[in-house]
Length: 164
Image (cartoon, rainbow, N blue to C red; front, side, top):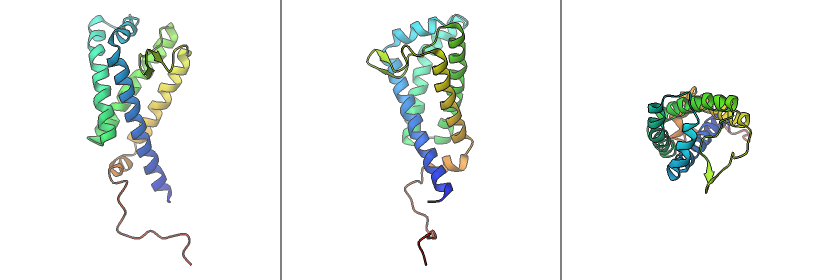
């Protein structure tokens, strides 16, 4: 397996992982909109009308992006929207860590988030790593374009390292 194939497979795995994360985050928020609304209310630095729009838009966009990533529909666009969302989430989590109002209402199992009781700076680190991973995928458009063709074999035979 060549370096290019390894990078393509890593990008494909990253897209699937991001899709699962966005779906999980969307379902977590949609299933408990009151908790998500309470988290948004703590962000007093944003105008109320933005918070009201975010209450419905964020989970909806996460759901659509997650489905697009997993189903490979408008993949390039979904990766770029993911990068935009993750960049916004990283800035919001920095603000939350600075003010002590961290938490996103996502990645829940039942009523408990995987990040309950975790320092705000760990949430910043999580968001920054996801943003960086998404940026690497977005900035490799050839690999994103080839994700749809991962299962197909090239018509030309690849040289084998075991040939004599």
